[in-house]
Amino acid sequence: MTTETRAIVVGAAVAGSAVANAFGAQGIPTLVIEKGFERDNSTRGDFLHPPTLRFLDAWGVLDALFDDGALPIYHLAVSHRTLGRLATYEIRARGQGRAGRTIAVPHDRIEAVMKGCAQRWPSVTLLEGTVTGLLREGGRVVGARARVGGEEREFRAPLVVGCDGAMSLVRRELGIESDRYLYDHYFVYIQADGPTDPPAAIHFCLDETGVIMVASRPRRRMRIAIYCERGAQNDLLRRSDADLRAYVTYRVPWLRDIHFTREDVHVYAVARALAEAFWAPGAALVGDAAHTTHPAGATGMNLAISGAARLAELVAPVLAAEAVDLDALDAALRAYQAERRPAAALALEHNHQQAGRIWMNGCHLDPYTYARNADPNAGWGVEGAGWGENPAALLRSAGY
Image (cartoon, rainbow, N blue to C red; front, side, top):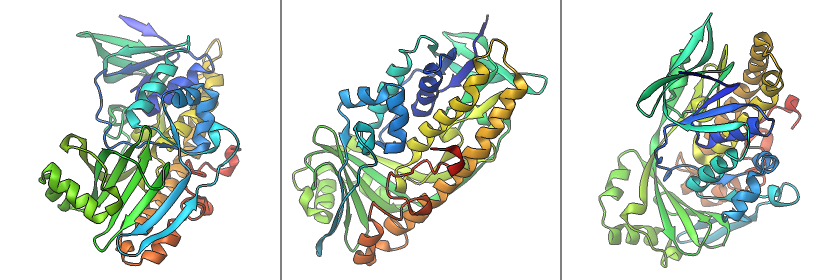
């Protein structure tokens, strides 16, 4: 059995759901194929920044995220276990309304809300299945094969978009290499209940050992991120609930009222990667399939969503035509790569630089310099952009 549509999206996590919403908003017939099982979102990002929120607002996603409990973030603080509070910065709004301020939303809820909104578009269809390969004719991608309910099926479309993560099958099928760099540290993430200080804030806590970040989440929850040199994460994982809680509260005394169990503790191996190409004839890569980054700038999801929006702006007019002009489609895909790959490379490099200032290289040993480097209103991103100000590193020529 063969089914035809205008766009096939492989994967329905944040990147895939963003592409589906962007295409759905323009009425492009789109088939989203997802594996259907629950992902482990325990180490995934949960901050969405103002430039990204404007896209989500246009797709009707932003209101749904607030209905689900999104928490606006107002402050960034730096403290030291023995020196006390070193700085409390206001994170400036980047415009009026709900799209003007960074929000925190647990990653699983971001995925669920974005997917639910994508399904509202009449032109978007979600299908549970596993993509097993790409279809090709005359040197270009013309669709995908997938196993659906135990049956192998073929789906044809002028465009296939790989949104299937860092180990992307689509990227491998296209023969596109990815330059991957594995950092020499890990993060131990803990999801905990309790109030943060300040509320609705990001708080970097220093001591003689290193850095712990405490980030507010909705409903009086928090995410704790503990920086660990390679191997040290195993020591933390072997501790009992009581010992781990004692370790955290010794290093960050104001967390004495938090509650968590071993089930709330997860390890994240940190890497960055950039695909050599973001497109091939009839295909494109979006999100982690194209790039992954150090979480220092909280920009991974934002790069994925803004990339999805830009891809749709470039290719939707071609896909909306009665007959798709394949040469015009490839020209649009070349334009997508010409803009987005340099933008992603800039973002990855600046995230790496900021990681050196707030996580790595013994930065905790100079607390006052650390506090200056953590100022969210300058220095985090491309051209001195503040935290969350321009996470996509969109090139000026894009007109955003």
